Image 1 (tube, rainbow, N blue to C red):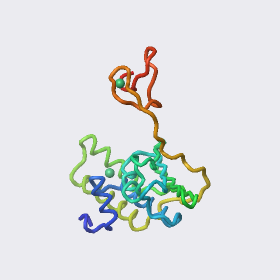
Image 2: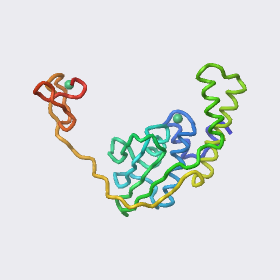
Image 3: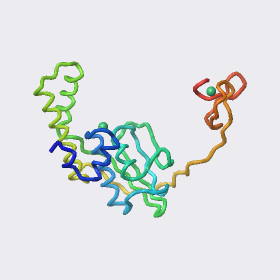
Image 4: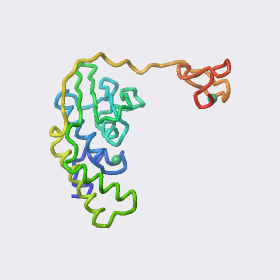
Length: 196
Ligand SMILES: [Zn+2]
Ligand SMILES: [Zn+2]
């Protein structure tokens, strides 16, 4: 089952956007499926659905494609906490649900071992195909049974702030327009972070 056509259509959409099929992408896909049931929401055309992600890995691409939560719209909030945790907040209903991956691949240790071999150039062809097989297995089981892998918790939280329109002014060094809230004082005048 390695052909893209064997996956559900909405997963294929994620894979097209992301560039490849991987377990990480399937984690994001499954997190969305697990959240949708609890939220009764199937995505955000505008900004009414907000997702707070606690990692910036492959999984987040599925969230962007399926839920319409994107950096550009300001309804994707990134916390650099290194966790496969996704909190969805529906502005319309005020409901929030926290989805956290609590069941890794049953072959996690073996996958780790094989990856190490790949990195150090010691993997045989047999190792490589085993690694592919184990990763595919995990990917497929995430897609088939999303709710099996996550703890789904309804939580109460305050509504995240809307994306704000902020003033910009030219950087005193490069002259490029910069959000004033992101500028820093450099020798008495305001500069962009790139210059400072
Ligand atoms: Zn990936
Ligand atoms: Zn500058």
